[in-house]
Length: 309
Image (cartoon, rainbow, N blue to C red):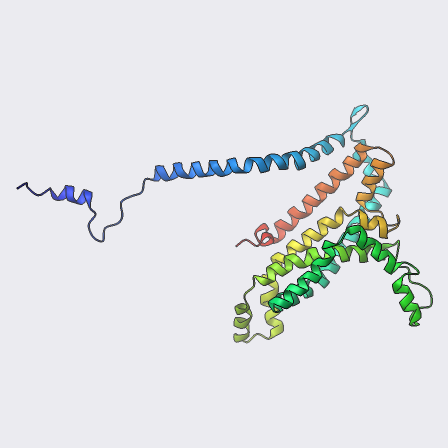
């Protein structure tokens, strides 16, 4: 009969009850982590190449053209932007973008709140009504507003028949008509981020605020509104950035009297065949857009914009 194994050997093969587990091989875990990271990086290569080909390469080409003319390297295209016609166009672009964004906030927040508080079936119906304009062609919507807002359009005809006005209102080919059309097109892009943010807010927060003595208005103002800020900020950025580059609606509803920055780019390309000036306009607009987004991110925080914890 063999002698029993030493106590040290038994301890090495089997841990005593209550003892901590054997140490994990840290080097092996680090190697596995590096392998997983390399695999994930490899999976992103096709998407990054596609982004580089479709986004970064055209931007780089425009940037290069903005410093070129037949004589070679030049800053003339950027110096030309200091002309009053260009500065006035830039001012109009930002004024219209800020106005449309503010109106979309005032209209979109109550709409998103009503949809978020509605029953599921009613919320689905309301969301379809919000998305219906998005499913319609942009040109169709613009021409529909032309029919509604022109001097002998439906709106002026109804107001005249009811005796509310004597002469038709000027609702077309000006700042007013352009604003109305852009708000109609941009409103869904404000409602959707707000709705997603509001749906994620648990009703328990409002109940907790009420149980602590807050009135419904105070609970809404101090609890619900701060929690919905990520959706509000995201919608504001989306609407504002899209408005900066809008072309079709200002061209149709503005009638050439509301000149946006994008319309100046189109004019330089189609009328003057000046790709250098058009590229400079595009580069300046891109830099301003990125600067605004960076500034908003610095003030509010990028984590709050994307809704990260």
